[in-house]
Length: 223
Length: 186
Image 1 (cartoon, each protein chain N blue to C red):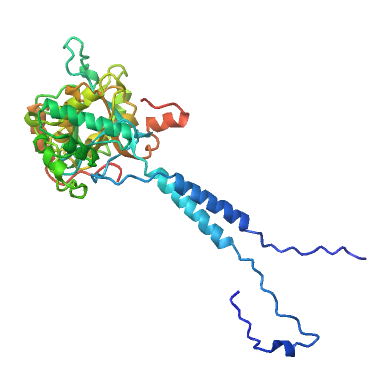
Image 2: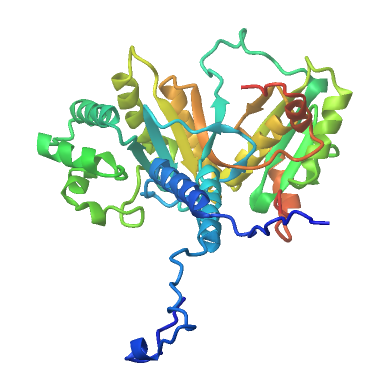
């Protein structure tokens, strides 16, 4: 009985193709990933179950750090920079700050604005490295009598008037006290900004709660 | 792989008829570890990029300037007032605060959810309104946490109010002492 000999095949598979795929994917992900812009103002945001991604365009971001200092920044795009320039120009004329065009250009390049209005020309003289949330005093909004956020928001409202309203983002620190938040809110309200968003870190919806049940059913949560 | 030909010089002479030529080493490298590494890096990048996206929570502020006639008054029976105090303390009362403060209760961020669920189950949806009053000593996190509770429990009507009555302040001060209350989600 001659049994046909089955040639014993090696179990080693050629890994080259798989390796190619792996590294192709790897390079794809690395190249497409957007780097997190270095945060000018370090803020630890609270968690929330909100699942909407924070917008990136037409952003006016107000950061509230742990000491209650308030900083204002805009998006990085060219449009956003133009808007920032217009905001500064509008403030310059309405509050007669005496900023030169050169000062305004410098402030537009600054990562954030965080000084009382009267000191804006001094912030313009600082180098970018010197502008940190520790060295700058922040926009005063501690009490209702001296709430410069109102002026800032008025300038923002003027600039965005007529067009698409800005995406107001409020990024507050966990330990920032409520009164600061309240004063920012009153600055929003005074300028008829009734819609804004708060930046948070994502968190899972606790199991068994109503929102969780809704999500399970595939219902869309309320906006 | 890293073997060297140690047969020395003059190998030619020694090679007899039965002696094979030095075996040609295969150029194939085992790529399995490299593939492993590749996929490991992929998973790492995928996870880290998606997680770091900040999310945004929407808040619509009421227009304060509306005339009193247009303001919607909260029905007493359907109102639940939540006060936020120092060190993550939470206080609440249903309806109107009793003059002697008997319905003023203290709780924390963990237990307030049960209270909201309870209130929601016993009141008509149309009447239910939650009034959130953060005290001056409460933090931004507290406010976000309680707003988050609203979306977790699908509360349609809630208001963020910041004028605390003196009676509420006194009761809060009286109850606030002691250790900080536990924080939600820990």
